[in-house]
Amino acid sequence: MINNFIDKIKLPFRKEKELYSSLYAIIGFYPHDISLYKQALMHRSVTRRNAKGKPVNNERLEFLGDAILDAIVGDIVFRHFEGKREGFLTSTRSKIVQRETLNRLAHEIGVGQLIKSSGHMSSHNSYMEGNAFEALIGAMYLDRGYGACMRFMQERILSQLINLDKVAYKEVNFKSKLIEWCQKNRVKLDFELVEQKRDSGNSPMFVYKAVIEGLEGGQGEGYSKKESQQAASKMALQSLRRKPQFIDAVFAAKTERTKMEEEPVQTVPDVDAREDFIISSAGDRQAGAPAGNVAAEGTDGPEAGVKKDIADVTDEFDLSDIRILPSEMSKEDIIAAAEAEAFK
Image (cartoon, rainbow, N blue to C red; front, top):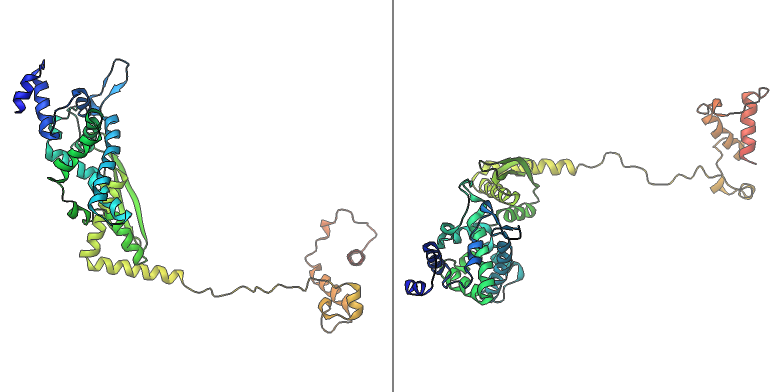
């Protein structure tokens, strides 16, 4: 049937016929505008320029396909899991549209065999197949509309390649799981960058380690910070589950840290305000009000107390601070003048 249909289409090259056949086997229908699908399968490593001088590759279609795919999978998950809360639906959708899942789906249906790329790609291909899968969704949307994309995902992907119920309850977010465990047990968790490097294909790579209460729980590397932290979290969870000595060390370190944080303060500062610097008014002194009386016990009255206070600080009073010193005034005269000025 496929060959009969293709024979009726006057195609100038044999490769064009092969592309139609391959796309039909993957998406389940014949393209109207084959140029869209060609672009969807063109990796940025073989970017060419159009008549206007703009680069042509699958990155723009990938952007569009990503948005369409989110909407379609969200719609399907919403209808399939009736009554489930928003967090559950978001988590399930993210497991399906994440790069690792799309890479596997693209490989299973044969998208990788149709991608045009340079021969100098690194081994991981920077999720090349998953990106091309999204670009194909974008091409389908422009060529046949939203309905065609929905049918492709329902009939070709979800009904044949993905078990929604299994994927919904499978935990793949190791970082989230590790953070949740640490929060429940009040354990301190940090992610530290160990190294940032490039692989043989000059693609950036990150190496992170998960540090639990100052102890390294696991180390992981990946082509993004998120990917490397996920790998480190997975190793840390495995260490916590399989190595009793590690989890014992974690809680011992936690105990030591909290013990240091909770040590009581030895000397508690006095919070009572000192009011012995207040000098009572003349009326209070005449009335004998005790609140304003600053005279020391055993003296002859308020003035004697004030004189005692001034005498106490005389040793700290530097005469060189006074800019004008009449030569005929002695030290005692200066102090007397200061007292008179203070009580003027």
